Length: 465
Image (tube, rainbow, N blue to C red; front, side):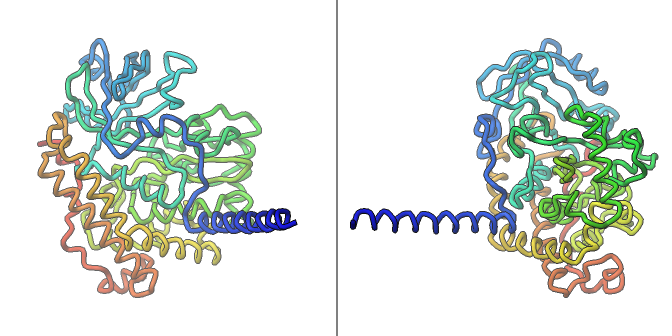
């Protein structure tokens, strides 16, 4: 009898604990903790970011590859990752403006894309199908992408994994790069499970075009009107996929019932970091690109991508003067672009018109500052990363900058972010205006950023050295 009663009590306790854990889990997600996802083997190998990995490119004619790099054609080569051989992978240069400028300045340090299954169907590196090697173009700190991804991951946003890699070519040093998981099948399965949805990378053919589809604006029901979305699909969409996405854009354009077509919680988490890092070469900038769009059952969300020009280091379309640190350290979190851009970015503009979403955005921002900056997590991340990569930067034979420039850039990006956190805190508390109009009216309310010179993080002029 006593034994049976003890068993009943144990069952009750177990049920209470289960409910408590479930409640804590649900609450945790609200404040930026994402549910545990699958951890494929490649995550503990190439994307163990606690160390610098070794990637050796074994290729017959590297000079020929560099000469043809601007064409972005895959060539076949072997890779040795941390001593392990992977045969017959596809390798090509990547990038848009960065690729063009590297060629224009007569340099050879291109960012690279590795497709493990390009020449061998079904091949993978412990489940990884594709990754890139980022060259730190216009990023003397070597940290812009890595820090932005760390912030996104901290906020629970599905984020590409990244880690540093010392790259050699046929055994000869080539430089320190950032290995980044490309959002394709492996990424989708890791973050969304085996029944994942559709993944797109909206991008323009020409910046001079209207590019309504890149901006996620609805202009009609015909899927042919959205070529900049569907031609960049990572998986082959069928007619039903196309119709479903167009319908989601139609509902998004109305500004009503957005909960039916937007993963509001996830998108708000994304925009907290997106506005913090002041990335003008993004959905909230003039270009409107540099993101992945995830759609599942008609629900839209954004995947972070490409931050080498974040932290106010992108000059195209930025207000004058372009290097005004006080302007960008204090850049308003509620109107993070001029009106013309904002009105044409419905995933931000229409979402923020709702009081509940707007209030949740501010609450999430407060939680981000508290957990990432007030806790010292950010400064610890910068310090740990600096200690880890500094010896490699010092001997990087193809670096875009000197070692002294690297040290200055790390100090500058850290100052920028800490002052940015101070300003955003003031914007949340109402002591600093959180709109462009408000700051224009009260410029003296801004945080003093005179100690920051933005070009110290890296600029095109560095390529001339």
